[in-house]
Amino acid sequence: MSETQVEAEPGAAAQIAGDRVGALREFARDLGERGEELGLIGPLEPPRLWTRHLLNSAILAPLITAGSRVADIGTGGGMPGLVLAIVRPDAAFRLIEPMERRCNWLNEQVERLGLDNVEVLRGRAEEYHGAFEVDQVTARAVTALRKLVPLTAPLLRDGGEMLFLKGASVQNEIDAAEKVLRKHRVRDISVEELGAGRLAETTRVFRAKIGTHG
Ligand SMILES: C[S@@+](CC[C@H](N)C(=O)[O-])C[C@H]1O[C@@H](n2cnc3c(N)ncnc32)[C@H](O)[C@@H]1O
Image 1 (cartoon, rainbow, N blue to C red):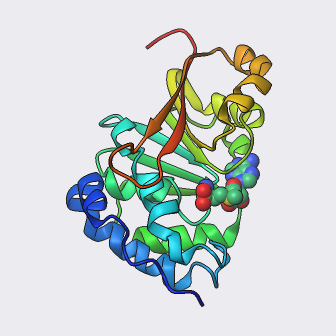
Image 2 (cartoon, rainbow, N blue to C red):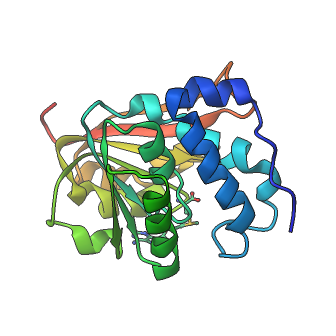
Image 3 (tube, protein in one colour):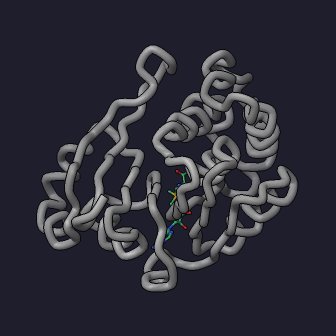
């Protein structure tokens, strides 16, 4: 097993997670120790757990609105939904994940960390269309934008917001998604670079609203 990264940029972690940094560290420890064996992270990930996964997810926290109802799609081992739920106890998170083993892991962490703002829902995002409405939807590494928009837009209230962590080819994804963006009334699109001056690796977020209100 590879050695888990000693917390990179501890100053940044404390700054981003505030008084929740202890809980984030507990989660990091468990994910680093058991994540590979449980198939939650690849064998190359433990040495870059903080840089690539935890801080990369937590950096979205300031974009979560106080009191927001949030759905995270394809949470896997916890990124970004569980990390955000740890850092933002003032928002309510639904983590939607089809794989049973990953849901068991997420539920175990929710219990262990005493999180009362998280509900883990086993299934695919499309199974929850029409079941509830949220204010914000998040996702990382689930699918390309042209598929992600139809998966997530029906979960959002009119005026709700999409926050997707994306890689360097995000503009190509936006271009390829032109039709579905129009079909789902996605507006106010921006790509923001987060973490500049705080993290060694900055993160891109696709940010947009849907519908006509808000
Ligand atoms: C590559 S993993 C990424 C996991 C996590 N978001 C991360 O960044 O580490 C993709 C995850 O999306 C889930 N997934 C795939 N299709 C989905 C769908 N239609 N609805 C919800 N989750 C889905 C998979 O089960 C898997 O856990």
